[in-house]
Length: 584
Image (cartoon, rainbow, N blue to C red; front, top):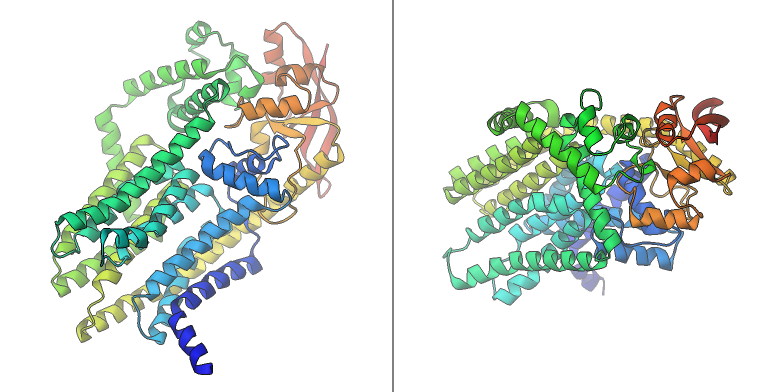
């Protein structure tokens, strides 16, 4: 019986190693850190899904596609007080680690080599991904899903029929489609790299071009595309109402302005004639500047479209397409070779060198064009990112992660050769990567700890703010956007999904049907009216400058003043003030 148990464990050795690593990393991180939402986007998404925003769990959470949002909201309906969104994100992370490790270990046959592989993978994860695993952001989670899908696709056994191959890659299809539903823009950015992965894997087949091989690889890519189209179709059907269509237009216009055209948007001074032509005063335009545009009901998609059109014209006058491309290429080269993305760029460059050296020694020259194809596509994607002008770590790190996993897949497939010379080369590659991890892992831990300490300090204010709101549950509070924007929350601590008695005065959720639903819940028609007329509605702000608000009401012929009624404290120090709009 013991022999049978040992035999069974041996058969499931890869699964046990993979599960052990995923549990070890999850538990290890939990010991030293609390999991945080990296930025407030995920915090708001969680609030919508859980019902903390409107009072009812809602699948249409604006940032992700409806099918996935609906499924998570259903979990909140079943057990409202559990942190389902945080659980889901962590399951995605550590589930992908499990799947990646299990497939990785299938390339190793001896227990000691599997142990070395797991140690190396652990070092790479801590060195490159610790920050993203602790401070969770759905955009990066989408990339982790997509990268795992690409890795599983490239390393899948291609023997058997088209049906067999398709069934083996169902996991890759599901991961890619979930990544698309979670963050559509990220999956679309990474999709060309997934296609390159499929093309390069197809090139491993001998003979290369047969109808059966074409059917195999196009079936997988077709499955991903079909899942994406179905997801988008369901999403569009769920948002078919006129109110959601109007908001989606506003959302897209707002995104275009703040994310891509902000540096060219016209300030009020010197552009008075333009703003007069679209019916905006200086005080109304100031609400665009400080992001509190939810106060002004006249700021709609049409207004933002006109501002965007003006900004586009100014951009064309100031910068030509050729100059933009030239600068984008210069930024791309600098970013690739310097410390801006260190150590991601270092690992990727070294992996390119390793794959090239190994394939030259192995005389598998087809890998040269595969590397060239990968390099060309990655260059195009980076140029696109720099051309658009939105270069954030939550975009650049996913690009590196996808490329990194593809190069690892290249190495694993190529390293199947078991000749003595190549065994030495494999040992050398492992040694170099381990040495890099040992050299760089301290920096990764220190970076994560520094951010953790910073967030813990800010979290004290967040706790004090939440305590104040809970103690005054019969009141409603509007928060200045920039007074609120630095706050985020822990994923699994002090979970409270009851409806919140506050809202921010702008942001990507503002003017949505969900905002209107929240206002109705609290008996309010508009922010402007509630601030002026409701006796229990207040503003929370970190500053004393109220010219933008008093000026806005003055434009409407209403004289108001701001009365400070309370302070929100942490360690006996005021960090936010509570104010009442009073009509004179």
